[in-house]
Structures are given as C-alpha cells and as structure tokens.
Length: 333
Image 1: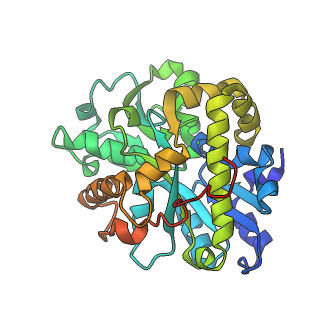
Image 2 (image 1 turned 90 degrees about the vertical axis):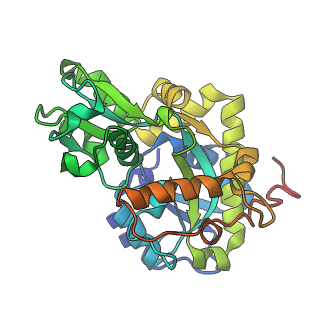
C-alpha cells in the first residue's frame, strides 16, 4: 500500500508546497485514522478516481489543529470529521470549510472506556480521564456527566492523542479514556487486566455523531468538478461495500494497518456508511434543508453548553448541497 496514506501533516505540507491551482485535478485530503473514511480510499482501488480524471492524495492526521492550519494555508482541498468537531473552537463563520456531503454515522465507534473500578459516570468525579480535545467521545462524556449533575470540570482531565489510547489506558492512574475505533476495541481487547468496559458510546446517541466531507471554499469555487468526482467516488465505494462487504474490507484493511476481519467487525458494530440517498436526506437538495441541519443545530447547542465552541454557527451558511443535487446526472452510479 502506498506510504502516502500514513504521512503526517508536517510531511504533507512540505511535499505539497503550493495550494492547488484551477487546473489541478488532485484532491488533497486530511482525515483522522477512522475506518468510517475508508470509502474515499477504497474508491482508489476500484479505479474510480482514474475514471473521473482526478487523483487522490489522502493522508491521516488526527490533530484537528494541524488540519485547520493546512486548510487555512490551502495545503489541502478537503477534510473529513464529525459535525461536532467541525463546529469546535476556534471555528467562526469566516473559517474556511463548507460541508458538501456525509460519509458515515457512528453507531458505537466512539466511546469512553473505563476500568473495573468505575460502575457509573458519577464514579468519575475527581478521577483522571484521558481524552483528545474535540473528538466525539468528549461530547458523549459531557452529555453523560450532565445527566448526574457533573461536568468535565469535575474530572482531572489529561489531553492525549487518540492514537496513544492503549499506552495511555495501560497506566493504572487513568480511570477512563475517550477514544474511537479501532483504538476502542484494541484497548478493550488488549488491556483485559484493567477489566475494561464501555461506559458510553455513540450507540447510545444515534445520529449525533455524523461524519462529514468539508471542502475548502476557495478550491470549491475554483474546481467544483473535482469535488463532484470525490463525492461520486465515495458513494460508489459505499454502494460497493453494501454489495461486496468482504472485498471492501480486503481493500480497506491495509490503509489502516488492520486485517480484513478487523475492518468487517468495526463496520458491522460501529458505523453505518451513508449512501448517496442517505447523503441527500442529510443535506437536502436544490438549496433546501435536510436532517443534517437539525443535527447541526442540536450539536451546536451542546458544544456551546459544554464550552467546546464559542461561536454559534448557522447550518445554512455551513452546509451546501449544490454538488449533491443531480450529482449522478449523466454519470453511472
């Protein structure tokens, strides 16, 4: 598998140098190491980008600050993260990035893992909890704490990189860790001596954790065609997964350093990929609103309430369904 898939944002910026030009047909993407984004990569194995006359330069980067900086500089064309992460500080209305599609919904793939001494969320008061800023597990934890009159300020919080989940949770001083797949299952399966269990996950809050495709505004204005190609390839790969799940997992596994069986388990237990029809239902078409607008408002208020965001964003300004409208007109599905 090409090494490009695993380069850091620093290496990425050094390699790209200049932002894309109007004639550029390369789609440059940064996204976290999350199997939910596999369709964008598997589309490469299916030959979709080549057929569309574009190429994909996709790299993993878990640090949102690095991604936002790359977007601001014009080093990348798009990123993929949850609605909640999209909204988090320091985003303001003028921050680059317009939501043009969805790719998956988390149904168990994000969560908080606790050790055997924690029976309920109330037991976390005063305990050390490790979690990366802005990730979905943090929002889920805050929602769970609020049910018992606590907040994240009642914890001893330690900020980590999600990729370090196993090493961090191996420390007995850490009572809980917020994370996502595949790290969630890996930590639970490896660190059995800690008697781990999932305290709360996205399975408990359906439709809250939606992963979106966000385009850099200038690139979207200059080269909308390559973003249409990206969306067509993503939804073709999703359709392929529905029809050929085993082959999809075989294609996806090397990108994430997993086995095909690992990918299959994560997909079957943690997420739902969104089809083109799902994406249309989420974003709407023809300038009309879809159900993502309501999700956006709900998560926005949660982020404001929990201090993860400072500015209330308008979903109408942040979501654009123009590319989804008639996306496959004149094109094979």
